[in-house]
Image 1 (cartoon, rainbow, N blue to C red):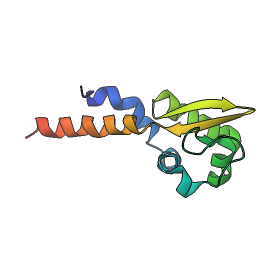
Image 2: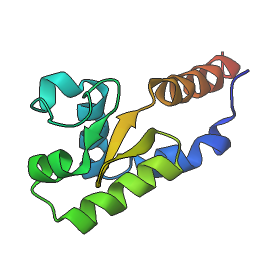
Image 3: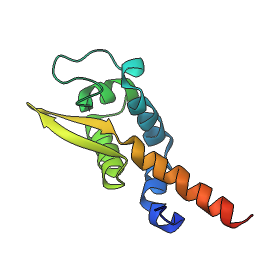
Image 4: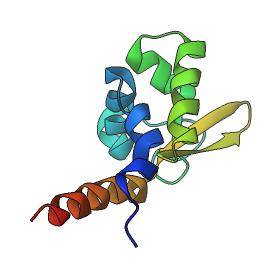
Length: 109
């Protein structure tokens, strides 16, 4: 069942900043954008917040804030491994966005 666009508002807001959109894009193909990690597999476990911080050039608190926004919107999941938090994209959430826009466009036809 497709969600109406209004229900997608948190995800749309989360992607409304260039930094979060860029991070989301990187997380969708982590091996292409991040080096191998000592702890955690890039695809199965997610990307360490430290690696995201290094790549963005933003401060760790700023990156953490961006990641919490993406997680609250349901676009990423997180897990703690040792002392670090690892983030993984949820491709199905983006698929839901696409379906919502597709359904909205089809109602206009």
